[in-house]
Structures are given as structure tokens and as C-alpha cells.
Image (cartoon, rainbow, N blue to C red; front, top):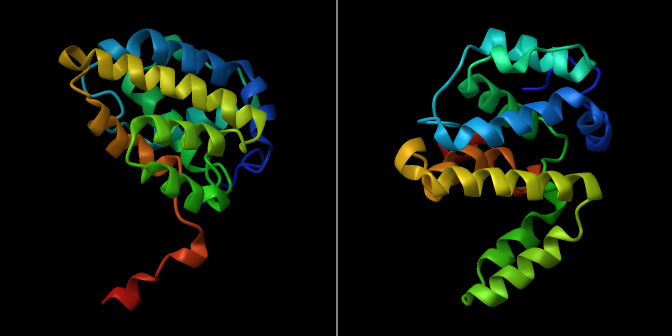
Length: 173
């Protein structure tokens, strides 16, 4: 579902320069690893939409007074609504090919190669996001979020096959 936000089609770099988004990521880094069910539990769509719109517009948002689960939902929504997806739908086949490598060393080398094709802002956000997710999964005894759980919750917001590679639902029935 596309938002009516005029800032949705703005380049990722411009969005990240807005201090609110960087503050949101910093708060998630600080509190996410110690929050049970982070990225799993849902939050109010109305509230998350209001905060998301405020962040997109550059308005002052008091993020520290917001529940951490709400901040996680806002981040997922942000990632999901990046045109052509955060990891670039046109690179989908290359990402899938890299993940099929048998040896860990080959897989990592191939993933780095595909990641190098991302625009710089996407790559910087990817590094920040991976660091956040790694910290959360390291604290799985507290957060109850393993790497697998995080992949289920966050992964679909990062990459999807290009539209031409998907079948319409009515074709499947």
C-alpha cells in the first residue's frame, strides 16, 4: 500500500539526513536488544502512521517517549515503503544466487559483491540495520528474537522479487 506522503519517493539519503530517522535507529540500537518481541509485536497503525509522517516531513518528534515496539514498526514500515525495496528488486536474482552458495566463505563474498552494487545510503543503512539485528539476536534470551525470528519479521521488508517475477493470487487458485 503506497502512502500519500510526498516524501516517500525522495531519495533514501535525503530521508536519512533528517535527524529523526537517525534518532530512531539509535534508540532501537540502545533499547531493541533488551525488548522482548521487538519487531514481532504490533503497534497502533494510526499512531505509527502519524509518527512516520512527522519523521518524513522533518517535524520534531519526541521518540524517547514512544514505546520501542512502535519505533520498530515504524522502521519496518519505512523499509517496506522504499520504492523498488531497500535491497533493490532488480538485484533480487543476484541476492538469491549469493544465498545459494554452499560454503559460508563463498556466500559472504558473493553477498558483499551484490551489496556493493547498492547506492551508498542503502549500504550504510544496511550496515546499521545488520548491526542492530545482530545485537538483538545476541540477546535472544531477553529479546526472544533469534536470527530466524528477525529474518521472518524484517526480511520481507527488505527485498521482494520484481513484480514481473510474481504471480497474481488468482492464478494460484
